[in-house]
Image (cartoon, rainbow, N blue to C red; front, side, top):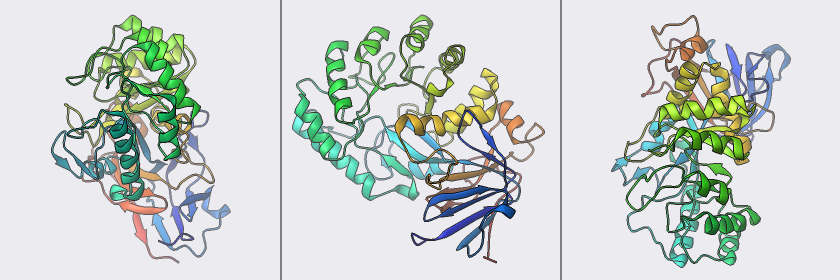
Length: 392
C-alpha cells in the first residue's frame, strides 16, 4: 500500500485503547492514513470516504498490536537456539506486532571482544531495520556488556543507531558497581538498559540478586519472575518497592512469582510499571501465544480486568520503551489485532472468557495500516472473523 493509503475498519464491537486510564474506548470505527491512526470513534462522525481498503470487523474487538518486551533474536526469522524458522511469523499469529531484543545472545560464536560485540550489535540493528519478518517490528541490536567497555564505546554504539542494551549480567559484567557505571554511560547516550534478574538461565550466566539489580539501576527489571529461576519472594517485593523502574513479567518464568510482582505493583499504586515479555527463544522454546497466555493468566489468577492486562502488553510497554505504537491514539502507528471470543469458550463475551483464563481467537493483524495476517493458525478459532470488503 502507498504511503498515503487509507484503511477503514468499521463495525468494531469494542475498542481496547492500551491505556490504563481508559482501557475501553467508545466507537465502532478506526481510520488509518499512511500507516498511522487518523481518527477513531463512531463511523457516522468520521471521514470514511475514498478508502483504499475497508475491513468489516463483524463486531469483534480491536486492540493495539501486542508488544513482546523480551525476545532473543539472531538473524532474520530464524533462531539457532531452537533450530526454528518463521518463529517471528508464528508470534504474529499470536497477535504480536512489535518485539524488543534483550540481546542477541544465542548467535553461535557471539563475539565477546569489545570491537566484535559493538560490530555485532550494529549489524543486528541493521538486520531488522532493513528486514521485518512478516512485517513485525523487531527492535534489535542489543549488545551484551563485557568487562573493559569504556564510555566512548557507548557513544560509538549510540552514534551508529543502537538504542538498547542486552540483559546486563549475561556477559562478564556481573557486579552492581561495574554494571551501574555502564548503565549510566548507556543512559547518557540514549540507550535503554534491561538487567537479568534471578538465577542463571544458560551456562555462562549467573545469579543476579536484588542488591545487584538495585545498584545497577537499569531501566527495566528484566524478567522479575525469573528467566527461568525467580528470586525469593522478599527480594521480588523489595525490587518493586525500592525503585520505580519497569517491572517485566515473562512467560518463560515463574508464574507464581509473576503474580506476586503484579500484585505488589498494584498495592504500590504503580500498575503502569508492569510490562510483558516471553523471554524466547530459550530453553523452553518459542511461545507464539506467550503474550496472550500471560494476559489470560494474570487476569484470571490475578483477578484483574482483562482490558487492564492488555495494557501491560501494549500501552505500558510503548510508554516505557518510547515506541510510537501500542495505543489507539491519533498519530500512532496503525498496528492492530482484531480478536474475538474463541469458539465454544465459556463466558458471556470475550473479556469474560479471558478473565476465566481462556485465550481469544485472533482474526486479523494489521501493521502500519497493512493487513499482515487473517485468521490465526495458532490461536483457537475465533467465533467471528473480520473480512476485507471492496471499497464503497
